[in-house]
Amino acid sequence: MIIDFHVHCFNDELAAKAVPQLAKCANIPARLDGTILSLKESMKKAGVDKSVVLSIATKPSQTEKINNWTALIQDDSIIGFGSIHPENENWKEELLRLKENGIKGIKLHPDYQKFFVDDKKMYPIYEVAIELGLIIIFHAGVDIGLPEPYHATPERLRRVIDDFPGGKFVAAHMGGFSYWDEVEKYLVGTEIYFDTSYSVRFMNEQQVRRIINNHGYKKILFATDSPWGDQSEEVQKIREFSFGYEIESAILGLNARELLGI
Image 1: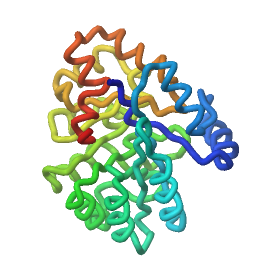
Image 2: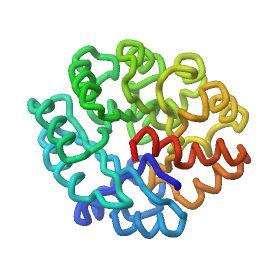
Image 3: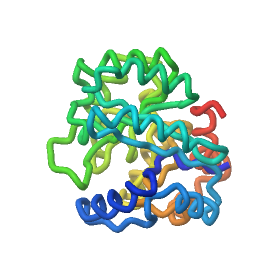
Image 4: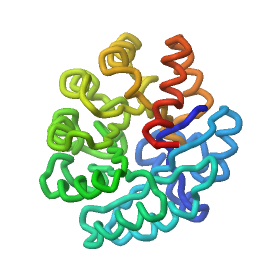
Protein backbone atom coordinates (compact mmCIF):
# COMPACT_ATOMS: atom_id res chain seq x y z
CA MET A 1 0.00 0.00 0.00
CA ILE A 2 1.24 3.49 -0.92
CA ILE A 3 -0.11 6.41 1.10
CA ASP A 4 0.60 10.02 0.20
CA PHE A 5 0.44 11.79 3.55
CA HIS A 6 0.40 15.38 2.29
CA VAL A 7 -1.70 16.67 -0.62
CA HIS A 8 -3.84 19.74 -1.17
CA CYS A 9 -7.21 19.96 -2.89
CA PHE A 10 -10.05 22.44 -3.03
CA ASN A 11 -13.66 22.34 -4.10
CA ASP A 12 -13.91 22.70 -7.87
CA GLU A 13 -14.92 26.37 -7.87
CA LEU A 14 -12.20 27.43 -5.45
CA ALA A 15 -9.52 25.31 -7.12
CA ALA A 16 -9.88 27.26 -10.37
CA LYS A 17 -8.96 30.45 -8.50
CA ALA A 18 -6.68 29.28 -5.70
CA VAL A 19 -4.21 27.07 -7.56
CA PRO A 20 -3.12 29.64 -10.17
CA GLN A 21 -2.87 32.29 -7.48
CA LEU A 22 -0.72 30.11 -5.21
CA ALA A 23 1.46 29.04 -8.13
CA LYS A 24 2.12 32.67 -9.04
CA CYS A 25 2.85 33.63 -5.45
CA ALA A 26 5.40 30.84 -4.96
CA ASN A 27 6.67 30.96 -8.58
CA ILE A 28 6.26 27.21 -8.99
CA PRO A 29 4.07 25.34 -11.50
CA ALA A 30 1.09 23.29 -10.34
CA ARG A 31 1.18 19.69 -11.56
CA LEU A 32 -2.60 19.23 -11.11
CA ASP A 33 -5.59 21.55 -11.08
CA GLY A 34 -6.24 21.10 -7.36
CA THR A 35 -9.50 19.16 -7.63
CA ILE A 36 -10.29 15.79 -6.08
CA LEU A 37 -10.93 14.37 -9.55
CA SER A 38 -7.47 15.27 -10.84
CA LEU A 39 -5.92 13.91 -7.64
CA LYS A 40 -7.64 10.56 -8.10
CA GLU A 41 -6.45 10.37 -11.70
CA SER A 42 -2.91 11.07 -10.49
CA MET A 43 -3.19 8.43 -7.77
CA LYS A 44 -4.27 5.80 -10.30
CA LYS A 45 -1.34 6.64 -12.56
CA ALA A 46 1.17 6.60 -9.69
CA GLY A 47 -0.17 3.53 -7.91
CA VAL A 48 -1.05 5.53 -4.79
CA ASP A 49 -3.77 3.83 -2.76
CA LYS A 50 -4.70 6.62 -0.37
CA SER A 51 -4.00 10.34 -0.10
CA VAL A 52 -4.31 12.55 2.96
CA VAL A 53 -5.89 15.84 1.91
CA LEU A 54 -4.74 18.74 4.09
CA SER A 55 -6.79 21.91 4.23
CA ILE A 56 -5.87 25.18 5.94
CA ALA A 57 -8.22 27.74 7.46
CA THR A 58 -6.38 30.99 6.75
CA LYS A 59 -9.17 32.98 8.43
CA PRO A 60 -11.12 32.09 11.59
CA SER A 61 -14.39 32.24 9.64
CA GLN A 62 -13.23 29.51 7.23
CA THR A 63 -12.82 26.82 9.89
CA GLU A 64 -16.31 25.33 9.95
CA LYS A 65 -16.77 25.42 6.15
CA ILE A 66 -13.44 23.71 5.53
CA ASN A 67 -14.18 21.02 8.09
CA ASN A 68 -17.59 20.38 6.55
CA TRP A 69 -15.93 19.87 3.15
CA THR A 70 -13.28 17.63 4.69
CA ALA A 71 -15.95 15.32 6.06
CA LEU A 72 -17.68 15.16 2.67
CA ILE A 73 -14.64 14.20 0.57
CA GLN A 74 -13.64 11.15 2.59
CA ASP A 75 -13.94 7.78 0.88
CA ASP A 76 -11.90 4.61 0.38
CA SER A 77 -9.01 6.51 -1.19
CA ILE A 78 -9.26 9.99 0.35
CA ILE A 79 -8.47 10.72 3.99
CA GLY A 80 -9.32 14.28 4.96
CA PHE A 81 -7.63 16.23 7.73
CA GLY A 82 -9.44 19.18 9.22
CA SER A 83 -8.17 22.61 10.12
CA ILE A 84 -8.36 24.78 13.20
CA HIS A 85 -7.70 28.50 13.11
CA PRO A 86 -6.31 29.59 16.48
CA GLU A 87 -8.49 32.69 16.52
CA ASN A 88 -11.72 30.78 15.95
CA GLU A 89 -13.52 31.01 19.28
CA ASN A 90 -15.20 27.63 18.70
CA TRP A 91 -11.96 25.71 18.17
CA LYS A 92 -12.72 23.20 20.92
CA GLU A 93 -16.15 22.39 19.50
CA GLU A 94 -14.62 22.02 16.05
CA LEU A 95 -12.04 19.54 17.31
CA LEU A 96 -14.80 17.51 18.94
CA ARG A 97 -16.85 17.65 15.74
CA LEU A 98 -13.88 16.47 13.68
CA LYS A 99 -13.42 13.52 16.01
CA GLU A 100 -17.13 12.65 15.84
CA ASN A 101 -16.96 12.73 12.01
CA GLY A 102 -14.11 10.25 11.94
CA ILE A 103 -11.44 12.79 10.97
CA LYS A 104 -8.02 11.54 12.04
CA GLY A 105 -6.05 14.75 12.26
CA ILE A 106 -5.60 18.46 11.68
CA LYS A 107 -3.23 20.56 9.59
CA LEU A 108 -1.79 23.74 11.07
CA HIS A 109 0.17 26.26 9.00
CA PRO A 110 1.83 28.67 11.43
CA ASP A 111 2.94 31.05 8.66
CA TYR A 112 -0.47 31.47 7.05
CA GLN A 113 -2.22 31.43 10.43
CA LYS A 114 0.33 33.79 11.99
CA PHE A 115 1.37 32.04 15.17
CA PHE A 116 4.68 30.74 16.42
CA VAL A 117 4.41 27.02 16.91
CA ASP A 118 5.72 27.18 20.50
CA ASP A 119 3.51 30.09 21.54
CA LYS A 120 1.79 29.07 24.76
CA LYS A 121 -1.54 30.33 23.41
CA MET A 122 -1.51 27.27 21.15
CA TYR A 123 -1.00 24.79 23.96
CA PRO A 124 -4.69 24.36 24.89
CA ILE A 125 -5.41 23.44 21.23
CA TYR A 126 -2.60 20.90 21.19
CA GLU A 127 -3.73 19.47 24.51
CA VAL A 128 -7.33 18.89 23.41
CA ALA A 129 -6.28 17.49 20.02
CA ILE A 130 -3.93 15.04 21.73
CA GLU A 131 -6.59 14.01 24.24
CA LEU A 132 -8.88 13.23 21.29
CA GLY A 133 -6.17 11.13 19.65
CA LEU A 134 -5.87 13.46 16.65
CA ILE A 135 -2.70 13.70 14.58
CA ILE A 136 -1.27 17.23 14.30
CA ILE A 137 0.70 18.00 11.15
CA PHE A 138 2.56 21.29 10.91
CA HIS A 139 3.92 23.07 7.91
CA ALA A 140 7.56 23.30 8.98
CA GLY A 141 10.43 25.50 7.85
CA VAL A 142 10.39 27.95 4.96
CA ASP A 143 7.25 28.56 2.94
CA ILE A 144 8.57 29.65 -0.43
CA GLY A 145 5.46 31.74 -1.09
CA LEU A 146 5.73 33.78 2.11
CA PRO A 147 8.31 36.12 3.66
CA GLU A 148 10.12 35.71 6.98
CA PRO A 149 9.74 35.22 9.87
CA TYR A 150 9.06 31.51 9.60
CA HIS A 151 6.96 30.34 12.49
CA ALA A 152 7.72 26.60 12.73
CA THR A 153 11.49 26.17 12.89
CA PRO A 154 13.02 22.93 14.20
CA GLU A 155 14.09 24.61 17.43
CA ARG A 156 10.55 25.83 18.13
CA LEU A 157 9.07 22.45 17.21
CA ARG A 158 11.46 20.77 19.64
CA ARG A 159 9.95 22.81 22.49
CA VAL A 160 6.46 21.63 21.54
CA ILE A 161 7.28 17.93 21.39
CA ASP A 162 9.22 18.18 24.66
CA ASP A 163 6.17 19.76 26.30
CA PHE A 164 3.73 17.21 24.86
CA PRO A 165 5.33 13.76 25.10
CA GLY A 166 3.20 11.13 23.43
CA GLY A 167 1.54 13.55 21.01
CA LYS A 168 1.09 12.43 17.41
CA PHE A 169 3.06 15.17 15.66
CA VAL A 170 4.20 15.38 12.03
CA ALA A 171 6.65 18.00 10.74
CA ALA A 172 6.13 18.44 7.01
CA HIS A 173 8.96 18.90 4.50
CA MET A 174 11.42 16.54 6.23
CA GLY A 175 11.10 18.41 9.49
CA GLY A 176 11.51 21.92 8.10
CA PHE A 177 12.00 23.05 4.51
CA SER A 178 15.52 24.50 4.03
CA TYR A 179 16.21 24.05 7.76
CA TRP A 180 17.58 20.53 7.41
CA ASP A 181 20.80 21.18 9.34
CA GLU A 182 18.65 22.44 12.22
CA VAL A 183 16.40 19.39 11.80
CA GLU A 184 19.44 17.23 12.46
CA LYS A 185 20.38 19.33 15.48
CA TYR A 186 16.99 19.65 17.18
CA LEU A 187 14.57 17.02 15.87
CA VAL A 188 16.36 13.91 14.66
CA GLY A 189 15.89 11.10 17.15
CA THR A 190 12.86 12.68 18.85
CA GLU A 191 9.27 11.46 18.82
CA ILE A 192 8.01 13.30 15.78
CA TYR A 193 7.30 12.09 12.26
CA PHE A 194 8.76 13.79 9.17
CA ASP A 195 6.96 13.74 5.84
CA THR A 196 8.92 13.86 2.59
CA SER A 197 6.73 16.45 0.87
CA TYR A 198 8.47 18.85 -1.53
CA SER A 199 11.85 18.24 0.09
CA VAL A 200 13.78 15.14 -0.91
CA ARG A 201 14.44 16.39 -4.44
CA PHE A 202 16.08 19.56 -3.03
CA MET A 203 18.19 17.88 -0.37
CA ASN A 204 21.67 16.47 -0.51
CA GLU A 205 21.31 12.71 -0.91
CA GLN A 206 23.68 11.99 1.95
CA GLN A 207 21.71 14.22 4.27
CA VAL A 208 18.48 12.45 3.32
CA ARG A 209 20.05 9.10 4.12
CA ARG A 210 21.59 10.40 7.34
CA ILE A 211 18.32 11.87 8.60
CA ILE A 212 16.38 8.70 7.82
CA ASN A 213 19.03 6.49 9.40
CA ASN A 214 19.46 8.58 12.56
CA HIS A 215 15.82 9.50 13.04
CA GLY A 216 14.53 6.01 12.28
CA TYR A 217 12.82 5.02 9.05
CA LYS A 218 9.63 4.13 10.92
CA LYS A 219 9.05 7.85 11.54
CA ILE A 220 9.28 8.88 7.87
CA LEU A 221 6.07 9.34 5.85
CA PHE A 222 5.93 9.47 2.06
CA ALA A 223 4.31 12.69 0.86
CA THR A 224 4.26 14.79 -2.29
CA ASP A 225 2.65 18.17 -1.56
CA SER A 226 0.49 17.61 -4.67
CA PRO A 227 -0.41 19.63 -6.73
CA TRP A 228 3.11 21.08 -6.26
CA GLY A 229 4.74 17.67 -6.53
CA ASP A 230 3.97 14.92 -9.03
CA GLN A 231 2.97 11.68 -7.33
CA SER A 232 4.51 9.37 -9.95
CA GLU A 233 7.82 11.23 -9.87
CA GLU A 234 7.93 11.31 -6.07
CA VAL A 235 7.24 7.57 -5.73
CA GLN A 236 10.05 6.93 -8.20
CA LYS A 237 12.36 9.27 -6.27
CA ILE A 238 11.91 7.23 -3.10
CA ARG A 239 12.53 3.99 -5.00
CA GLU A 240 15.72 5.39 -6.53
CA PHE A 241 17.28 5.50 -3.06
CA SER A 242 17.22 1.67 -3.08
CA PHE A 243 16.60 1.50 0.66
CA GLY A 244 15.55 -2.14 0.40
CA TYR A 245 12.10 -3.66 0.64
CA GLU A 246 11.54 -3.24 4.39
CA ILE A 247 12.49 0.43 4.59
CA GLU A 248 10.92 1.39 1.27
CA SER A 249 7.61 -0.28 2.15
CA ALA A 250 7.57 1.41 5.54
CA ILE A 251 8.19 4.87 4.12
CA LEU A 252 5.79 4.52 1.19
CA GLY A 253 2.86 3.36 3.26
CA LEU A 254 3.22 1.10 6.27
CA ASN A 255 4.29 3.88 8.63
CA ALA A 256 1.33 6.03 7.60
CA ARG A 257 -1.02 3.07 7.88
CA GLU A 258 0.07 2.46 11.46
CA LEU A 259 -0.11 6.16 12.41
CA LEU A 260 -3.57 6.50 10.86
CA GLY A 261 -4.79 3.25 12.40
CA ILE A 262 -6.06 1.79 9.13
